[in-house]
Length: 150
Image (cartoon, rainbow, N blue to C red; front, top):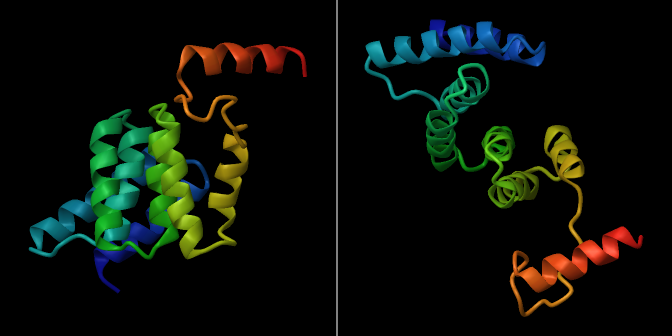
């Protein structure tokens, strides 16, 4: 096993135990190692490096770029879509997060992290006036009225 693969596995182990900072150090080391050896980094490494860059270093835009690149390379890996969706969600972009989670679930419908994220996001009710956008004032006001009377 390559040294960068070992660092990736150790980083994932730390990430599962919520040790973001140490996981970030390992992922970044693995990325540097692969770049120094002239290899293209794996999609998994890009994704996890992006995830920890966003959540440990608070560099959400940089993390998002790495995660987007990862899903372009390995579009069949639901874990990568989960990482991407988590960053979108942290940035307040629920629509893109939802789309990323759905793409991951299309690949693996039983994926526990993706199902959990979708459940946490909740299910939005349909617009009262479907011909208007969700953000339209009329939809907002009527929606607030009905929520208050539930």
